[in-house]
Each structure stands twice: as C-alpha cells, then as structure tokens.
Length: 470
Ligand SMILES: Nc1ncnc2c1ncn2[C@@H]1O[C@H](COP(=O)(O)OP(=O)(O)OP(=O)(O)O)[C@@H](O)[C@H]1O
Ligand SMILES: [Mg+2]
Image (cartoon, rainbow, N blue to C red):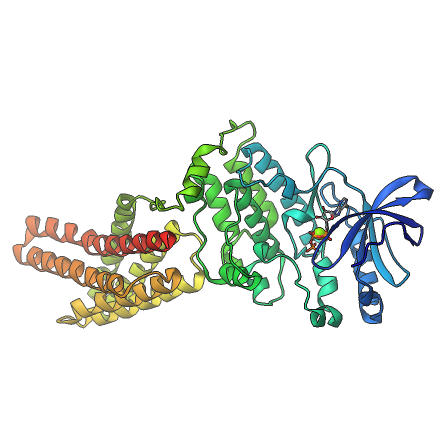
C-alpha cells in the first residue's frame, strides 16, 4: 500500500507508518479533538468498494468495540474516508512480543505473566463467543510496564469472507502460529486460539518456533501432520511441568487440548509458581544444543519407566483377560487385546502427548483383533501378537515417518518373540503346578507386554533420533 503519511482521514491526521501486515497497514495518527496520538489500521482500498464487506466490517467492529478487558487493546472507532476503511486504536509505542523473542528462552516469570494475561483475555472473548483466529507475537502489544494487549481480535474473520482478498492471493494470518484445523480450512473455535497460544509458549520456552519450512504452506502442513519436536530437546533446562503444558495446548486434535483458556492459565501457573526461582533458561547450554542440531535427542522418557509401565498395564490386561477367558476363550482374548491396546496407547501418549485420540482408538482396535487371533490357540498364539505388533508399527511409522522397514519388522518380531516366551512360561507353569507354576505364570504376565512394548518404543526413539539428525 502506498505511504499515506500526511493525509487526513476523517478527523485523523496520519503521521507516520508503524508497520504493515498481511492484510493492512498500521499508521500513527493524530486526533486533534482529544490531543492524542492513535494507531490507525487501514485496510487496502478494494475492501471499501465491496458493500458486503463494509456491512460485515461495521457489524463486527461494533462487537469488538464492546470487548472490555485489561489485556485486550480497545477499539476507539472505525470509519471510512477517501475510499479507505480503518480502525482506530490506542497508540502503543513500546513494541510487540516480537521484540522479546530474540532466539533465546524468556525468564520463567515473564512466561508465566504473558501466558496468564493472554489466556485470560482469550477466555474473556471466548466466553462471549468470539474467536481471535490470529494469535501471534505481532498481535501482542506490550505497554511500557510489560503488560500484554492483545490486538486484531477477529479481524481475520472479518477479512476472510472478502472475495477481493482471495482473488488478490493475500495470506491471512501467519502459518507459524496456525492450528491444524485452521490450516485445514475448518471453522476454528476457542481451542484453535489455545493452540496458537501454545505455539507462543513453545517459542518463549525454547527460543524458536516449533515448525520451520521453506514455504508458508509447508509450515501449515507440518502443523497438521508432523509430530511436535520436543521442547526439552531444544532447551534441556526446560522443566517437565512446562513442557507438558506446551504439549497439551499444542495437541493436534482440539479435543485433546485444554478445554478453556483459563484451564491453560491454571496449568502454567501451577507449572511456574509465583516467585519460582528464575532458572536461567537462556544462555550457552541452549545455543549449544540448538547448534548440535539435536543429535542428542535422547528419549524424553527413560526406557526403564516405559518397561515397567508397559508391564504393569499388560499384567492387568492379562489378568482381566484370563478372568473373561474362564467364561469364554474368544471373549477373553478380545478383552486381553483391547486392554493391551489401551496400555500401548497410554504409554505412547505419556511419551508423546500429541498422540491423537483417533490413533489411540485404532490401537485398541488393532490389539483387540490380535487378541481374537490369539484366542484361537495353536499358531494363533504367535500370529496374534505379530499382527498387533505389525499394525502398531504401521501406526508408529505414520506418526514418525522415519521408521524403516527393518524397524517395523523388528517390532513385529519383538512382539512375536516376547509372546512366545510368555506362552512357554505359562505352559511350563501350568505343567509345574502349584507354587513354582504360580510364580512362573505371574512372572510371565508382565514379561510379554513389557518386553514387546520395550522393543517397540526403543525402535520408535531410534526413528526419532535418526529423523532429527536428518
Ligand atoms: N496499536 C498499535 N500501536 C502501535 N503500533 C502498532 C499498533 N498496532 C500495530 N502496530 C504495529 O504495526 C505492525 C503491523 O501490524 P499489523 O496488524 O498490520 O500486521 P501484523 O500483526 O504483523 O500481521 P497481520 O496483518 O497478519 O495481523 C505491528 O507489527 C506493530 O508493530
Ligand atoms: Mg496485527
């Protein structure tokens, strides 16, 4: 857009440009009646020539003008003049959140304050049925005391429907902060804003945005499909409690995120208690890790805890399965498999909270099928776990994409092998009878599932490390 400095728009005299975004330019302007500077957000000319747009713009601006919250930048006025449509807001000189994000993690208390203020502002708007749709650092102005003022509320929606915009090919919003559902063109709800706030939190905690790519479209696709690079691999000093908030807020499926922004605020406040020591997150350690391109991307969960969690889950599954098998062998097999699937899903989700609900249901289905096959006895005892392991590795492969055919084979064989050992122990136990047999059966129960899961997740981590190296 041409430089409008010096022009008079209605009662406002334009002083100087402040910046330009994807769909508008922002100017500093003077309002003589009030003797004050204001910020004018001026939309490109072609918008004003579309009467439908102007009507919708007015309607929405009136809704926005009613938002009253200490962390939402108020709308003073809006109007049309000289063929331009504009919004008038307070002029905030001190900058935006972009100025704070300089490739280094922020101090914890600052993170706590920013997420709390933005979350509170979002919750207020969401409870009134308004979705921001473009939460990102350039839309967070900071006053001179460092308080946040969220701006451009709902503007993306106002502009979205304009035919002119689509034909002019302008990009709406910034892909770097866009939720998967927004990227897919679905109508976003409040949880989409929560995702974007999660991305901001990710950036504040690690010093960099989660997904980078050559083109904006490629970034959108990464948000939709790629597993989130673990924040702790970029910033090893990041407390687990904060990482968990990021992972939940940035779940691919909106149903897995915080249901409300206030919940996210509560979670971050619990993760960073007031007065918690300013852990020095910034500094050489982070740079060093970032520089080494994360070849050290070690599993964020230890293999030992994966083993015992899996063993415990599978033991419960097998005990309950055996009880059902007493009534009906097939039913017992299905129950055992399904509960095993629940276990695998829980452990996987514990490792990677972004695991979608759909995948977890698929896991239960796969293993129920495996259980059904196992219940047939004979070769079924080996084929069943093989099928479960193979299908699970397919799922892992899709989630990680870096998994090789060999790793998939390994996982399948791992399950077959561990189950074979289990079956032998149980058979031996039953034959040995009484005490020794009882002990053997009890030992066998956690072994199969634990071992199988262990082999599987070990391969999963190797795939991740290889991928991150690449
Ligand atoms: N009220 C304001 N006071 C002072 N400066 C502002 C104000 N609002 C916006 N700015 C500045 O103007 C710049 C451009 O804002 P604008 O909203 O047009 O673009 P953006 O937020 O970067 O992208 P998008 O168009 O996607 O929202 C901002 O980055 C900010 O620096
Ligand atoms: Mg903006």
